[in-house]
Length: 296
Image (tube, rainbow, N blue to C red):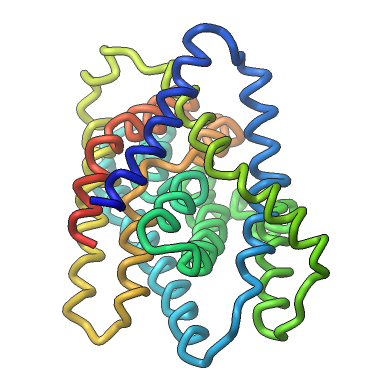
């Protein structure tokens, strides 16, 4: 019940963002600014601060499993989605496949993981997001534009990746940043959850009732929010550690990734469809995520 109440708190922040956009308190320019603030400063600060934790051989093994399982999960999800939407036009097929394939594991995954499993579990979500970025700019980009579109070096322009690299260095070596630096990182990182939820809520203003008539888009939401997370639950019948399975499960249960809409625009592939998919799956996740939490 406590976890459910914490998640409902996150959804209240989403609703606040929705009404801010609805009342024109926050326009597109303001949203882009908040989004940049989260991705460039708040989220990297959160990662650097929280990854300064004791290292154990068991934890290293578990993080490696999270990375491998995430890559495998996203890969399998991409193949399944691609086959399901094979009859669509190439551009629409690419967008639907990417929507179903990757989750909003950074913006929503971090807050939900910490609310459900505690702050120490954030490092598992960080590893999931690292694999997510790798798969998005390789396999995801491949679906959009073939081999020439695959850009793993694009990751080097992502501040979150540099935060992960720096955080892993601190994590593995046991080095610690000075107290005043950590205080600043902690204060900045603490804004990640409210700002991220606020931006997500504001994006829901683009939803329309007619979006519910797109059967393929509803199929994407079902795959993203129910089917693929349920597949992860099967791993509970394996010897894998519970923290590994639970963290991959929760990150997989998040709605469609906002990055999908950005990549659809970059590769000129049904960017309006991508935006609708992100918004619709996020709205539906307000019902599915609490249900998924009951299975943790």
